[in-house]
Length: 247
Image (cartoon, rainbow, N blue to C red; front, side):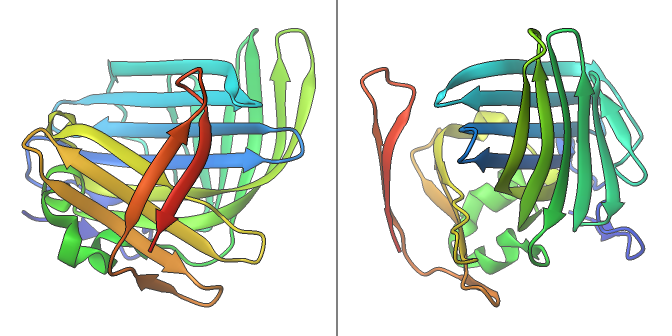
């Protein structure tokens, strides 16, 4: 494995030699007032010369807009100063601290500003003891950080939804072997007192378990030794009723 981080722009990672080498830029957020949340991800497979994206929004637990694309045309661009994949434009205003997400179509449009609440850290490095094959098969580096998100979403009926919420973003690089995963559970809450938690429990196709798990206490990120996780779903089988993650 080889990887170099450009010290002048920590969101631009120079490609490694793994055949499934990928770089990705991910954001999730939720605004409790509008009950709107979303997941945005742009991924690039360097050696396959292709890109992909997730663009998923929901309101009050139900789908609002979903667009997922794979095997898209390759882009050599990166968020600084900006990159665009399938109409989704991501611009780095301050590397790893401030970014803008834009998208416009007749059915759905967003203009969102994400401002970091603390410096991002490498979740793989802090979870090394239990990351196991998750680090080897899915990412060599996985920078995590929380942010405040503001802006607006416009629906096809011209309804404009103002957004003011919080979320978590990651910038990752390394192999992205989706065939390694049988399933995985995620919990990324950002608490109103400034604390935050990153929990990823992955189960491989071989039945092994691996974790990314760190906690922000309001001052610094720290590794977590042990997690017991359980998700409960509503009757629709889609909406999360409650999360029970003890660590």
